[in-house]
Length: 452
Image (cartoon, rainbow, N blue to C red):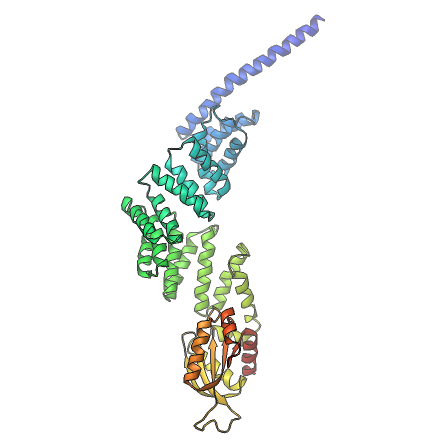
């Protein structure tokens, strides 16, 4: 009996010693970790934190300090794992300051594009630290990225109220007001942002967006050039800079910008890179470099199958490999194109060509039926033909203009050929009028017939 009592007593004593040692030794070891991090001895800090966690996986203070050490070493992919563990399990106040933790954690979440989780943390920060304007700014940015502009504007305005000199908030407010067509107020906010901080180059990005939409392309180009000095918006500013050149028809300049934007993203992970590739493909398409355009669409499709109309573009041009005549039609030089159209008119439509004129959008031809022996006579039955090879569908306005030109030439019939088709309004307008709209499939057949 005495032996049992002694054994129980020994177990109790040993348990107490373990608890005492755990509470005495571990705290001393854990307290050393932040000191080592501050001294820059992150490897030692990581080693001690891992040793503590090996014995006590639920020591969330050790998880927190391990995450801080990883941040110091720029190993943020590991830091975010440790911080998530703390966020999900820790009781704040037990050595972990919630305000500091959430400030650090939310920035990590933004870095890895975990917007919803970042938003939760920033919203908590607006309550924990309601006088900190930056927290309201970050909430506004996330809501804006999610296209929830009404909420975004409210948080941005709160940010500007707390910090009247917050240039980025004024710039964001300006852009959102512009989207809702409050032009005067928008311009005031952008001007305020630039006045407050001329060196905050991201403000020029928003100014550029406003000027571009207002058709002031020269002003927009200058603004986007300044915006490129800000690394956070540099890629977007280069893409917008290129889009201005694209609108102005300066395709060579646009190509340079879009290629630069793609090269900035070495790992190819940024969503903006897909837009750069998309616009680069559009430039190649306009320049008749269809093979290069297809290369870009295929890269985009691998990354995001639902990106804009890329799937439709690939489908539209899939016949190029099988049909050399269509490929020549789409990719030949401007000098060669009228020759192809003339040949298609003579051999495919069996018409005698009266005139053949190169146009910005393609080629315009007039002709008469070869079987009409009177075609050299004064009263000819003139047929009016247009060949379009623009990447966009032909619009209603072009049908109006074609009919007006027909009348001036006393033409009795018109054929409009388009490799990109016709929009709905154009088709509707052409109904019951002496004008036939011919889309790609029939165009392919005509080109094949002419090439035989």
